[in-house]
Each structure stands twice: as structure tokens, then as C-alpha cells.
Image (tube, rainbow, N blue to C red; front, side):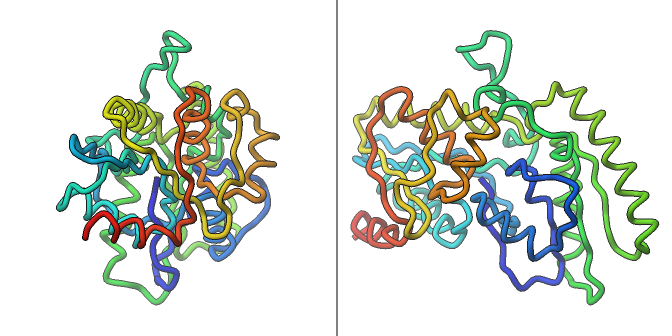
Length: 286
């Protein structure tokens, strides 16, 4: 759900494993974390504009799944539906507490519980840890970016840890203490996803409206990976199955849940390579 930022930025945030569940004891540098984020369908956020989706009453098409790592194309999609109303866009992007980040929504299939168990399963404790590294050369965007990360951590109930001037021993001590705190936070929140599942409920409602309007549904996949990485709905929470699916997936992490749901309820959709999006856009705005 998070469009990726530029590669060459002096202030790097590596809170990317939160949504991939790929947190462990292996030491990783920022470049490695960026690559993992991209493989998972998530990137380092640079844009901060919440988007609740847009369902046009007059449109004949609706984009129901879009890989957020292609942030420039995502921005074009949002701009097009916002200003021209030529197609619908069911995808949502939650950026803060007000828009629904960290919020959970009831799942009708499991009364009294949210969607998290269905689409994520129990998440690891490390997802409750947000680590930020401030580079030595500095940047005018440091304060703003750090403020965003503080707000994110507060919305998601995460422990925020800042790496800046600490020596190795001091850093290891701080990290160990933060991981213990993350474990407590995770247990207190019943191992649910810290980012919440409100996004899924909002997305589902948008898809339902598009289907009621008999709009053609469209799914955009990673470049040269159309059709790969799909999962059955009932296996989404299975860690091993999820790991296997992500090895060569054409879908981002959130997309995997979206497409699994579409298949589960029997909604048909047209699959596209992301490189087809410009043509899709131009054919509906001219």
C-alpha cells in the first residue's frame, strides 16, 4: 500500500520488513532492506497523501489491484480518477490514524475478530519495531521524514528506534531492548498486524460498489510477472505457503490478499503487466 520513494536519498528508513514478515536475526544493511521491500511489493514511502479509493458512477472500468512500488504510475492513477473521473480505482492508501492506519475492521466470516487472521495470520513481534537510520551527511528532509515515522509508529503502536551516532555495542543494547518491547506490544495486540486491516475493508467495499455497477475489474502486476504469485484465500495465513508464493510473485503483499479475495468470491478480472498501464490510462483519458 505504500508507494516507494527514490533510491538516492540521504535519509533512509528501513521499516520495510513490517509488511513482508521477513524479520529475523540476520543483519541487513539499508540496500538489502530496500531490495526486500521491492520484492515484497512495498517500498520506502515518500508520498504522504491518503487515498480512500474512488468509484465513478459512470465508469466502465475499475482498477482493483495495483503494485504500490510503482509510485509514479500510482500517482498518475490517483490524479486521473480524481480530476477526470474516467475510471474507478478501488485501491486505498492509508497514511495516518485519521485515514485508518492501524485500525482494524470486523470480519463477518469470524464474528468478533478482524481480517488480520485471515489475510496475515499471527505476525512476528519484529513488526512492532520501526527502525530509522539517519545518515551522516544530513538532509533538509530529515525533520519531516522523522516526524512521519513518529506518527506512523504512534498510529501502529510500534516502538520507534533511531540509529544515528551510537557505537556498535550501544546500538546492539538498544536494539535488544527495543525488540523485547516489540514482543510485549505484539502480544498485547494479539499478534495482529500493527498497520491494521481497515485498508482491506475499505478496499472490499470499493470493489463491491464497482461490481454492483458492472464495471470491468483490472489487476496490474509487476513487470514481466503477470499471473504469478497468486494464493488461495485459505492459505494466505500459512507462512510457508506465503513464502513460496513470494519467491517469484507478480503481486505485492497487499495485492496477494486482494487477488485471493477476488478469486474466492468469484469476481472475474483482467490481468495486466504494469508496463501496460500508460496505454490503459491514455485510452481512457483521450
